[in-house]
Image (cartoon, rainbow, N blue to C red; front, side, top):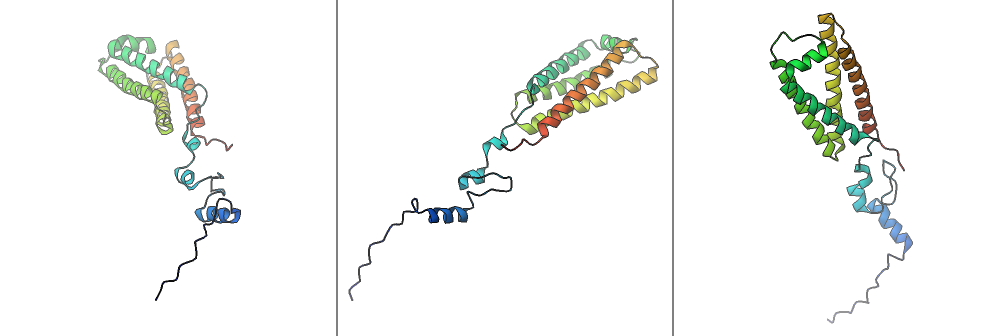
Amino acid sequence: MAAKPHPPLMKKHSQTDLVSRLKTRKILGVGGEDDDGEVHRSKISQMLGNEIKFAVREPVGLRLWILFSAVVFTVMALMALAFPNQLYEVVFDQEQTATSVSIRLYGGAILSLSLIMWNGLYTAEKVIIQWTLLSEACYFAIQFLVTSVTLVELDSLPNAAILLLLSRIFFLTVTLSYYYHLGRRPKKI
């Protein structure tokens, strides 16, 4: 038995065949809109996603605010560590009766928060920046409450303490607004 020679194979030019290309793209699941309304040009871009999605769109002045916060937290921490009695006298307008250990511990905690601020300044990850802002906002809220209760217990209201309370409300508002704007989903282009 002799083997019959097969007819020559015809190579199909799928690049020029529009119907074939559309069928292939439909089978692969590309070219149509996904759940987010994005149109992917290839399966690779569909699997990896759009890199614009991962870029953080920062609110104007966010990095400057984090820098300002990091500097202020560092200065306050160093003042609390080096001059605890003087810091207490400036805020509460009276001499400290307890030991300065508590104010130095406060300085250590503030220094830890300042390190978080410095880290948040140099990162590009949205989640880390959000946690940095959230920890800053929690600090301002807690400090406002603790200072308010202390002033009520001391039954005095010095001007420096009023200024401190107002500044904490202002800083809390700015920090929460940056946190809110950073957490919003960007509008589709």
